[in-house]
Every structure is written in structure tokens, then in C-alpha cells.
Length: 46
Length: 363
Image (cartoon, rainbow over all chains, first blue to last red; front, side):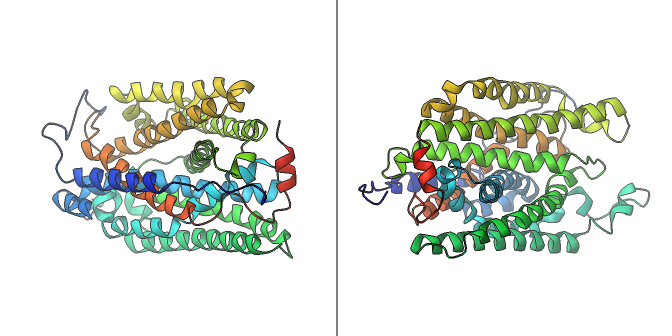
């Protein structure tokens, strides 16, 4: 295995995108859009 | 963190949504630990393909322990049994010896102690073996056996504490086992998707062979079936027993849109992956098996929503904005931590006695 030249992982961009998605989504928790809090489609059984 | 502010606006809703994302990511990390231990016990070339991905996932456990602190602090906002003012005639009074806030916190510390200890030792030994040939390779196997038993014990209680006790008047002895099986299935799907995503990197590319993917696909198929077996056994026993204390759990989950979610789980969490993974061609094709793995990862989240959200005691199909967005955000942060750990070590384990077999197992 050591004879093969190593390919760089190149995961930096994916890692930073994951962080952005995480922060943006968690930030969106602060302000739920109007009308999206509950979507009842039926009543719960007794 | 931004979510802390969101949490201040409505702590119970936020903490419950946080719990969904938390249990999803914890499932991948703990399932990874289980697969590592299974591989140390059983051997086989397949384990080398996913080992570094699984090890990196287990190294996110310290972060996950930290991210459980909001639940520990806000336990009274999340769990009905912890809320003050339980009526005197409530049957929950008899469960107080177990379901009380201080003991809940102590148990969580014990679980994390066990999981972090196992993850730390396996990662430490693996790093040592990278540096030089292992003088005592049997030590992995000697720890993996008790480690699996410890996992079985701790995940049973953790599933009861963190998920099943959302509805404290209901219990099922199969529930924790199904919870653990779901974690391992998540980790298999995550490991396969990750290995395929990294398959063009050398020298890792030499490990991601059709034969190794076929073995991983077979193992994932086994856990798809085991998950379905657990879920169906629980349903069958409760349906045939038809006891007043047990039936409401299913009534809440077969009502309105939750019934459609249940059908989707049967179709997409079991039937479709089951049929696809029977095909040798699908398992040996990197793109196809990765597609199945990603679909399973999505359905794992749907399964968690179906299990947990009706336990939040809202009327009808009350899926809220936070229930979806908070897990996505939590997943993003977890993935960021995971990728940081993955970059920390080479993708191919060094000095492993099974490496020759893995390379020979090419077709």
C-alpha cells in the first residue's frame, strides 16, 4: 500500500459547508416562519 | 450558539427537536463503535474499508457528550415524568425510584463513561498500530467482547431513559433492542456511503472493491431485516395482547398523517432496501449501494421522528419547523466534527494483519 502515492482527502470544502449548513439551520430555529409551528391534519385518538 | 437563542424563545419545543437530532447523530457514533467491535471479533476484509470512517465517528462521542448537557439541564422541559406536579393517583408515582431527575443524570454519566472509555481505548490502540506492528493484536478481540456486552446493557437503559420515557405510561421490552439495531444500521449506511464517497483516494481505492462492498451490503441487509423483525415483533405482540396500557402508543402513530409515515417506513426503510440489497449487482456497484445507504440514512431520521414526535403529546400530526430544522443543524455541526476527525488519520489502517486478505479480496 505504501508504494501508491496518497491522494489528498480534500474534505476541507465539505467540512466548511457542513458547518455553514449547521449554523444556518440552527440559526433558523430562532425564527420559525409564520404558520409553520403546527400542522394538524387530524385529531389524536383519545 | 444561535440555537441557544432559539431555545430561549420556547425551551420545550427546542429541546425536543434537539433530542431528535441528538439521537440521530449519537446513533451513528454508537453504531460505529458496535461495528468496530464486531469486526475485531469476527475479522474479515470488509471492516478495513470502513474502519477509519467508523473510528472518526466514535471520536465525535466527546462532543456528543457535551451536546447532551442542554437535555440534562432542561430535563423537566422534555420529559413528562420529570415535570413537577404529578397527581397522587398517577401510576408514575411507582416509577419514581427509577425515573427521577438526579438518577437520570447519574445514569447518563455512566453511559457516556462506558462509551467514551471504549472509544478512547480502541482509537488509541489503532493509532499505536499505525506507528508500529502490534505486539499483542489479541487485545482488540479481548476488549471487543466485553465492550459489546457493555454496549448492549447501556444502550438498553439509554433507550429507555432518553426515548421510551417520553411516554412514561407505556413500555415495551423490544423497544431498546430495536433502538440499538437502528443505531448499527445507521452506522453501516453511513460507513458505506462514506467509503464510496472516498473511493477515488489512493491508496484507499484499492480497498473499495466490489467484493468488499458486497460483504458490507450483505451486513447492511442483515440489519435492515433485523430492524424490521424488531419493529414487527413489537407490533404483533401489542396487537395480539390488545391491552389498554399498550395500544395507545400505536393508535397515536397510525392516526392521520402518521399512518402515511408508517407506510413509508415499511416501504422505504424495509421493503425497498431489502429487495435492492438482495441483488448482487446493486451491492457491487458503488453508486447503487451508496444510493441505498443514503436512502436508509434518510429513513432513519424519519423513523426517529415517527418514534419520538407523537410522544411529545401534541394534538394530531404536529410536526413542527423545529423538529426538522434542528436535526439538520445538529447534523451539520456533527458532520463538521466528524470530517475534522476523519482528516486526522490516514484512510488506510497500517500494520493490520488482515490487510493482505482485504487486498486479495478484490473480486
